[in-house]
Amino acid sequence: MSTTRRATPDACSLLDTDHKNVKKLFTAYDELAHSRSQSAPGKKRDLAMQICMELQVHTQIEEEIFYPALREAISETDLLDEAEVEHASAKELIAQIQDATEIDEKFDAKVKVLGEYIDHHVKEERNEIFVKARATRGLDLVAMREQLAQRKEELMAKMEVMA
Figure 1 (cartoon, rainbow, N blue to C red):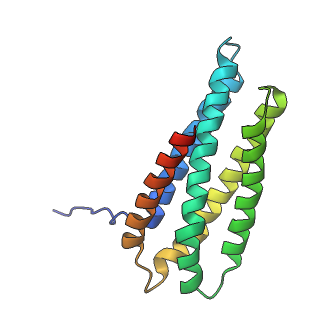
Figure 2: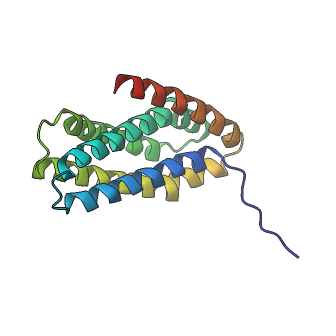
Figure 3: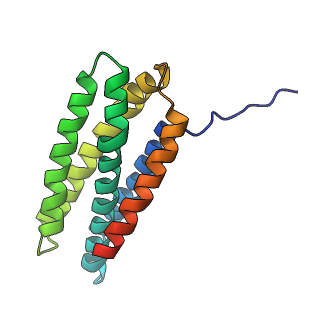
């Protein structure tokens, strides 16, 4: 009888779980954006702020821990350069969403475009960056997962205090 074992959770699996959670939030937002409910604007703002907070924490742990470690371990860093540029674009949209005073069509458009940016970014991470990271010798992704999880917890706690 053969049993299949799942790989030990590593840094990539933690980051990918974040990706899946944010995708669910974007889907929920999209459903609200098409709702005629009177409470939709308030719910949309709350959901958009949750998306922004999740993405801010996620990009920060990638930029502080994951990308630098990967940059040291691999010679070809073009993908990491692109990922950091994508992060910068996403951060600009996040700031616009957080600063918005009205929940109107432009607000919905900004959240939608942010979701599209993130979808693109996630595909590149899953199909290219995570593959390279997992193939790199000398990169302890299991230990890094613990580091990422701890830093994420710290940042989420700080964000919740500020909210």
